Length: 473
Image 1: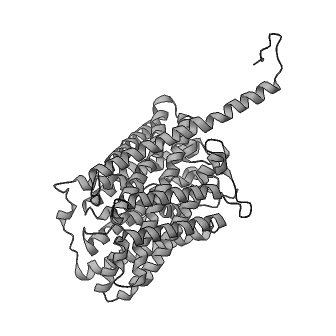
Image 2 (image 1 turned 180 degrees about the horizontal axis):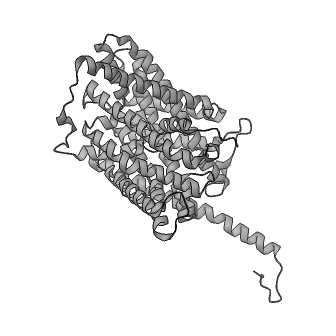
Image 3 (image 1 turned 120 degrees about the vertical axis):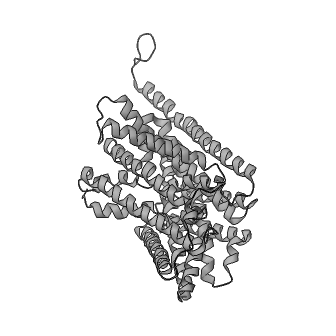
């Protein structure tokens, strides 16, 4: 395979993978104190994540990422659980993308239609329609092409550049309404706590390095610098976008419409209000592309699990004409649709978005517990580490990342300010987390054990029998 990816290519890849504009409004809604949380997360989570990815990709160079790493370090079930959480997180994340699309796309209809995004009937119908459309596109093979990812990436970059650029213009001409007091810890910090887990969620994505290890020029020299620079750029974009939202609309940020809300407000102040509709249209297409790419990519996990007998075999079916994993895609679409409907039954649109996002954070961070735990295991159990880094680096990065990840998981159980019922929120979070882990154990031990009896039967049928009538092993 041609090693075509240099440091610049990797830096751009990491920025595209890590920078997620969708989560910024829900974080900015908690005020300027979240800027400190971004900095803490970059130091204690992101760069340790880079060390973990480089170390684990070096030790286990095969494709598989979080699934393979947890399996090699802790065993088959832990590998399956890591991959399962990675997949189920996406089943929750895709509906949040649908809701985000609805919140942004109503701006394309022109002034006076923004309130439709808070209408549960309209938002549910639009979300389910887009979910069905993207599922169909992926079955036809249109959603997994390179172009759809490029649309999402380009759209995100343009949106971020437009947002931050307008923020700079507003700040230079009119100053800022944000003061030093906005960066202090609030008297009641309970709503800010949820943001820490969401910020960690926003900083994942470096595991892509494991998939592209064979295409990187001199990976030992290239990866560390690319991770550091990619992290710095992602951090600047995240902090810049957060500050811009605060400058434009303050803490009253709508978690679905915050980006377009800010652009509309700032564009009107500098006399280019016409930019709102084309900006919203471009961002809507970008969001749909991102949702399609996540849906198509994550459906490959149950598809492979079906082929490997860890999940029902029908999930491994391929469409006879389009050669796509249509059964896994349909299942993923149905589960995502059910989750949207169930959440709309008792919550508003913004609350539904926040609940789905919070649970997605928990499941997304589980594989990182295994990643950082593996670093600690290597540092403690190996007298002379055989990877990229020494014992001290592995231990410090592992402990920092592990504690930060566990803290991020724990804090996301504190409700965001959009949550109206603490009891329903905690039942949802605890119940769905336990259900997800329980289903992983069920599929692994029920379907995974089917292979063993079949293998033993084949072995016994093919081996000679001793005089005593027992198989000779």
